[in-house]
Length: 291
Image (tube, rainbow, N blue to C red; front, side):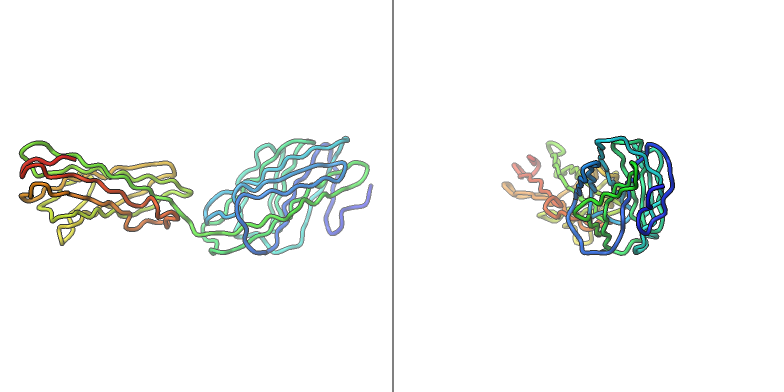
């Protein structure tokens, strides 16, 4: 048998290529990231789709490899480094014939040239700012064992969880001979994580007499704002909060502005630019409002 890889255990098997991810600690980088390598026999690349995931999120390392001669491989690569556990766990490896995960590395075995993806979950309790640096490698066997290290290394930094909540607000006059305006606030979640809970507050430009709502919204003590609870919302999901505001006798020409704002949400919102919306109405007569 040909010489073994240094500091690794090597076993024989046919028509397989192991794609190993080596772990150490290093500073953070932006997402995504790609490494490549070419040693004249093997040519490979790997892309990490998100180098700044939050706790609980899944990331994917996708390898593409080609060879200019027949290869076979057999090995368990044991790479001495800082342990991945308990912060990373193997989810799946689409495109691979087998895969494994230990305290020091992750592996996908494929039948010759092709694509394999290692999907890894960041544990929910991983401390924010935790950093991992991966050295991707392709290990293969022709008449001897070879290891192609891809460059540059790929760094992953765990960021705070986030759910981008966007707000829209629509207003409709309830009709003639009424001082009521019906509002619909629409909240959407652009991710990257599900919304667990939150609160929407709509500030009114004048004091209200009363508020009714089928969605749990209520008039605050000062009668100048309406609070609506927000429940769980999946990524790409949306929900409406409807409420009707009755005003006292109003002055002709008065503009009634209502501003809906995301008061808080969990997890945090990374994009405050879309956290508020305004709806405008005008008093035409004491008993006619146009929106």
